[in-house]
Length: 368
Image (cartoon, rainbow, N blue to C red; front, side):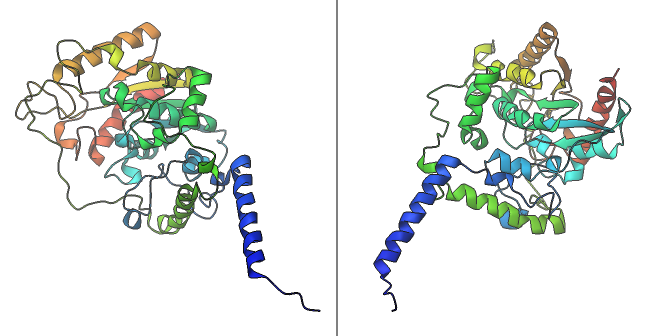
């Protein structure tokens, strides 16, 4: 005898099963983001995924750190016995805005065929295009899982203001990671920080988290074009160059001369990064900036920095480094102004080559 199928019962059972699956997904939280076609089907990316026009850049911004690192070439294999592994963290200048992967600082160091401690130097680009010490510390904590021999932390004063720390979306959307760093390493995180996005139980379900899951899938699909072209950002034929003529304004964020208040700076994040590095060699590098010779350059070095604030920052970093025995290098004026592109911190390929030349002996010196 044929059983009569009741559409309503089928619908109810289907919905019930879907709801159960959603709750199981939220409770179990399977690490789907760690399953990646990169380094298996496609080559790993030379830098962390970031992009605003995915169809042209074959890239996109997503905020799942596991998925981001799973797509990176550093995730490919265990470190070889003859590899001296260097990881670079920092802002868009490290990531390489307007630069091809081989033109970035990491790329320039790799083509230099360096040896350190009797091993071949291999540099990995873990920079990311927002300016925040807290963002750097967060990415460093993930980078430490790949057994680096040396950390190059490229930074600048703009990464220090407290209000900048959680302004980066990749920070705001990883509140659990920040609190983990707070508990383990003492990173100061405001419990009620309105800039942090807390994931509810609903947001951990398939439906609630569908955008993040879709982004992870899209990243895998863009691997086809990444593998075919090596393109991971848009390279415009022209761009607006960094500002040379400057406003007659002495303010740095809300700070005014004559004194830069250290309480307004996220020094705890800097100290936390040192603790995360632990016994691994760490070189903190004050990255080069554009030094303008245009209008009001007697007041400001560039768009970011009035002279009084930046000079005090340099003095502060030197004093803190000496006091805490940090390995600190100040390369603020190492690159001429005509080797900057669309920002006071973004370099041309030639500028990156000059920066690499400055760092090469320092990297080799780390083994002596």
